Length: 368
Ligand code: F6R
Image 1: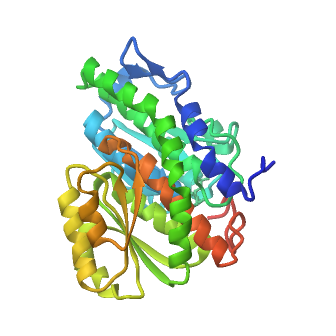
Image 2: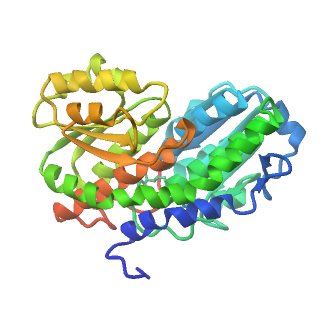
């Protein structure tokens, strides 16, 4: 049921204001200035004692996991590791007693993620799942967890599941943070900021026409780089993955400052870079990375904050600028990924690709 949209991917991109809302529904508590979850099945004392969290996943869900790492470290001050499930399952890393494993998966059927979950359970660790498909194998085998309630995701390229995963991870960071050192004032502020997000995403989607124009200008290039730092580093990875999987253009995501350690050698006039430069604590640093690319003749698309007093400055450096609404840094992944999803969608269409069913890919990867 495409509901009037030409493709599932576009429909699912446009569902994000509602799917994010659904991920939060009934889970925010003004009274506790915290989040609640019905199905975690792990008592507060055990969670309070957690000394380490391992997030394990594949693909897009792995990128959500990196955002989760930064969120848990900032708000809950818990050491976190994010592991590709396919590596984690065979690595046998030392894990102390108070380690909690959280598998992140849209389908709940990914073979490697399931094996990582089973291996963690076998070692006696509480193994939770952040999952979309109700009743899926991982949802059933996990000790507890949180559903995304994003509704079916049909497009092979994951879009709304990513933003719902990041939303649930933000709620978990709030919950774990409030058990530890976040004040009720900080909790209340986060709740207010989270409640505004669905409307913010509605506004972010208004960049669509601009993104389409930019896709028309850039769809013939065969290599692209995506650069972001801090919370936007995983978004750079996700933007590059979206482009590769549906348009078959070679793309790489990097932490912007890592450029000079190798990838900058790729920069020339036929390799555009997409820079994530919203306002925030490291704006100047990312801009200086952007200038390094510009100095070497690389075309630049910047994703920047609307109404930013520095917008004019960005426009003098970048060839094209896409504006997104202003949100606190920890919420920027939810907003900044929107133009990247739309960009890959339009580039793929312009190249005549099947956006909903890209070659060689399956919606759930049930073999290892
Ligand atoms: C990317 C994509 C894949 C999945 C990965 C994990 O758009 O769809 O990279 O994210 O196969 O799948 P789940 O989340 O179902 O475990």
